[in-house]
Length: 430
Ligand code: AMP
Image (cartoon, rainbow, N blue to C red; front, side, top):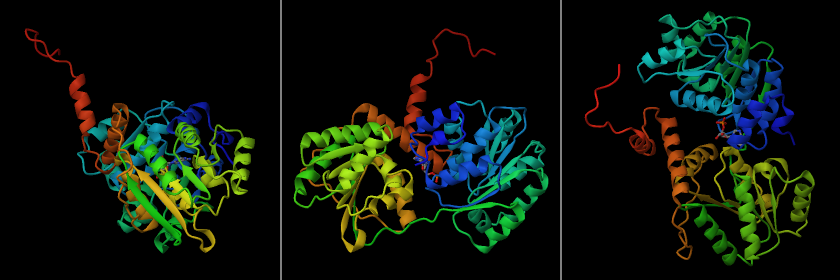
């Protein structure tokens, strides 16, 4: 299995990758990162949810390394402001330990702040084509240092009628550059664009397994917090003692994996093992082998197993956390219900994870049936810290969809932090 340290990325980027919690590269990252680093033009067919943004952002951050001059060197075009902001936020997260400056330009807001941001100097511009051209035509952009152009969600850009703007942009940026084109589908218009735009491209196609397996019964439970999820596990093991053959519990973080494992071990409903990226290769392989051979019947795992290891014929999959790489949902539940056997895939979801469920439902093109939480499950109160984390997460999601949204959580914080003006003091300092 490839790891991020196998790529030629510097310490600053690896630290950021670790911090955002990516443990192993997704398939598109595995393929695209080395190709972009080698300087190829790229034609990537991949949907949102596959990790495609980091697949180009990481090698591009590595390529331009640190802040330089005033003018942008990378231009990323996206069809909507929602996507532009999402890309910008990935760049900010992964570029956290670099001094690279990124500006997002999109419509719907007045251009004043965006122009001011550009004029302060930037290395990367993420933009919707219309607003980018507006600001260029007003004379605020110098484009002669652009060495990389990315078109993200090219199919959507074509659908939205952006072709004329894109053609115009291709005329005003330097001819000698690296081009990357990403599209979820491959209609004729996109193929045509690729001929115009790409120079001997490498093609990568990540075929989404976007239909959930029919023999799997999917169940979605809404719960308020992590502790209640743990209570759910106790209920689940109690109720299903007889039918449990092989259960995989998927979690997002290593720490959660360890905690869930300890808890289940204490419950004593079977032989359990835990695997995640911090466990050595041998220990992981042994756990998987023991699970496949039936010696172990409960496996707690982060996404490492979901992608890398072939375990099938599982009776129950429990998504303790909703997966953030949406395709993982399909891969995870695909481990049950193989070969016409029926399986059960349970997903536990908090208010803060609902956003991702909606995206997963879009990907699998079906609604995941919601089940009522059984009365016997103890609902634990949400600790303050967890509540704040969730509020912050929800604010962030709302802001992705609406950049002008001012989160309740942040408003409160700002109010709290504002110094109270004291009586008798003179007015504002000039
Ligand atoms: P994208 O397809 O770029 O929209 O990414 C979808 C989601 O996957 C985002 O929430 C990313 O933060 C997350 N993601 C991207 N790469 C990885 C990775 N290697 N491991 C775990 N999550 C990832």
